[in-house]
Length: 381
Ligand SMILES: *Cc1c(COP(=O)(O)O)cnc(C)c1O
View 1 (cartoon, rainbow, N blue to C red):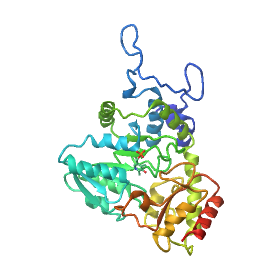
View 2: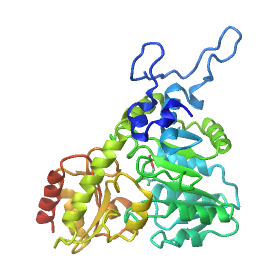
View 3: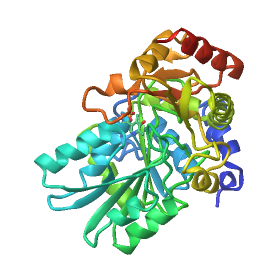
View 4: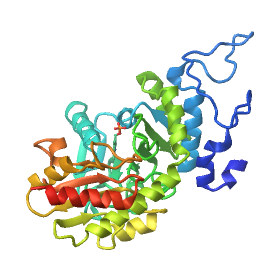
């Protein structure tokens, strides 16, 4: 156990594991952008670094912070969340079975459908809104169970411990997409997941200024296989973005708390509102996933919530257009609040109801955010 392990996760994050620069004493380590590393007199690598496609000092620092927060044997950083998922699925072989949610992050879903069409992967789809859906989807020959919690855009909550039990009973691995519940709120590996995936583009970085993806692994051997694949696929995160991500991670805990408080205030304000038919937020006791979320998450329920407007989809579309404080953009988990008409963004094949507005609530003043939604609802339709 190192000195860092005895400190609370919030302390480890705020100090980025207290990796003081050995040459200068700087409390903020520098960025090391080198693509290649010189050998010593004996022609051996001076440290373990050879070439930046394998990773480098700045990427490793960010990975160490993430592994510490996730309680992982190892965490790997990629150039985007999708790069991480694509690399993970490169370990699948033709004939392998994957159980995945029918409604899940659309990029990951498109990739799995492609693997099913072109690479001989068997895909079993299940309904994530059904608390037993994931467990029932697991068959004797399932290789991977894929869950997302809370899941876009209804914020259904998956009981990770129950999903892990079902997966492991069948000899399958559990992958948890925890993008909407970062490790300050939920430690999927502690609950039994084999891989915790995060799009670090979202809460982990938190400032909407980079794309990155993380795989946190329970098993060091599997992590080593993935490190080898990442080097071959060439999709490691750049040193500059790893450095920015370290800076973002320092404020993860307070950003999460503030976003959660703001989202809860918005959810409570619009619950029962004449222009809102339904508020989808796991922090509200009426949400079907509330009890599981309360048991497996800490520090709040996060900043993601959806509002179903009364009336037709044109009203929701108008609200997204007429908001002034909320920015009309996709993505989530940043300090600035975003509003999205998901149906319009996903296109005609989208299964998202047209009345749904997806909000990513940031750290601004809650009263400003509520007043903005009120004025947009007033002017819409
Ligand atoms: C954004 C996102 C991803 C993909 O991550 P990128 O960084 O955009 O490649 C995967 N899953 C979820 C839930 C996401 O929100």
